[in-house]
Amino acid sequence: MNYPHSGRFAGLILAVVAALLGACGESPSGPTAGDDALVRKYGKTLAELPEVKLVLISPHNTDIQYEYETAYARYHAEAFGERVTFEWRDVGGGSSSILNHLRNVYENAERSGIDVVWGGGDFNFTRMAAEGILHTMQLKSEVRDNIPDTFGGLAMCDPDGLWCGSAVSGFGIFYNKQLLDRMRLPTPTRWEDLGSPRLFDLVGLADPAQSGSAAASYEMIVQSEPTWQAGWAKLLSILGNAKRFYAGAGDAAEALPSGEALVTTCIDFYGTNRMAKYPETLVYLSPRGQTSFNPDPIAILKNPVNPLLAQRFVDFVLSARGQALWALPVGHADGPSLKALGRQPIRRDVYEHYAGELLPSIVNPYEVGQTMEVDTQLWNDSYGLLRQLVWAAAVRNVDFLKAAKQRLIETDFPPERVALFNRLPDNVATRERVAETNRLLADRKQRDLIVTGWVTFFRDQYRQVAEEDAT
Image 1 (spheres, helix red, strand yellow):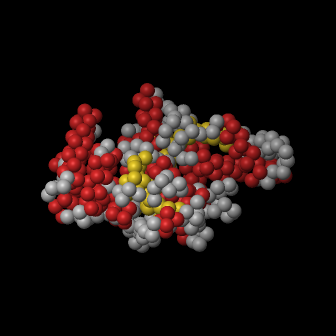
Image 2 (image 1 turned 120 degrees about the vertical axis):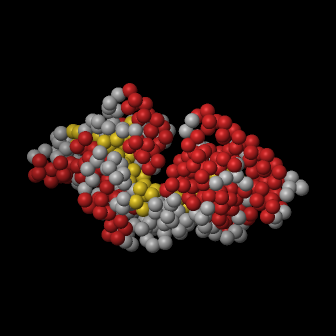
Image 3 (image 1 turned 90 degrees about the horizontal axis):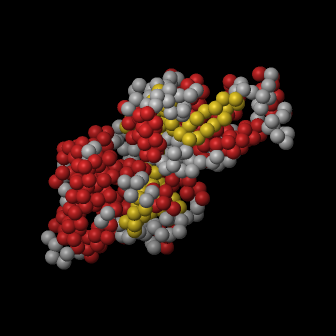
């Protein structure tokens, strides 16, 4: 993701902070009516306060950057008598690029010059913690009281305080309701609905080898069944309906407004943000009891430039006030200034305190029956493996897969042909073999051999399914 030039963005934030403090002059650099509170407390205007800089690295979009900069800069000026400027480091790409950048930096130096890493999913943060590049945070008791250690089988906060979820992300179904109505198709509400023969060639999906959010949604689909084999069969039925595989989950979501695809799997904020742009066309829903809510963490990096400022920013993001910013509409006293963010807070008390005031797309993950329990051991053993397996079975073999699925539809799904279609390679045929093979994939040479074998296996299998005399 490309971020605005840090100097220009900081200048904009300074102007907005002055406005939010009640400024009425032409420029934030001179005394204004809005500085009265600061002058009374500190004897200085906003522009005269000592400047401190916070350096962050994040895959979060510019809307999130802007709203949290604005809110925190105002809070910090009032609470600590300092004017905060923000610098966002841009290394190109998303969370995987950030992880690789930080690994490379800390391999060659003790300091990265960055204070805070924020966003991108717990998968990368767990690795950063294990590799010793995170700084222990001091989390307040009211934060610990309102953020569970684990939820739905997933860790929400590192037990040693090296990272903590700052929001949660669910996964669901995103569809074009106008196209659905025009085609007189039933509304999809469960994962299995996306595998229906009626949706053949209508599902836009993302390549999990390139999209972590797509990989997580596929893992949810697998885990919504009681066994690995049944979960794979459900996922494969959906993959077989693919119109095409897009490079990223955002690209797949963007195919819906134009009608290029009818439905996709989607991380919640991709869906809700696009639904806000096209409220008459698009719908996002979280399949009740068929998805978990994963933490989207924040952490302080090893040897931060300004450890006190980094800790204060973390405290703000995890506070009830900072959490409400994710989910309230523009215009609410505690909400964003320009654009609703449509993210799920991680704190339980925010859902209770702001009940009835949150955006319509926000669901309470802590409500009974909303969240499924994740098998964390299966997640650890299969998440990385599933990215490669889906690539080999579907992305690399999409034409063969679709021909096989079409043949199943034409022949009314005879059991023998279905069993052949769903068959897994021996090295991932059971949970035990999945765990063994997952360990082998850590070696690049082994991974190349294994994945190449999968590509051939599935291609041959789909050809057999599509044959007239398949048994």
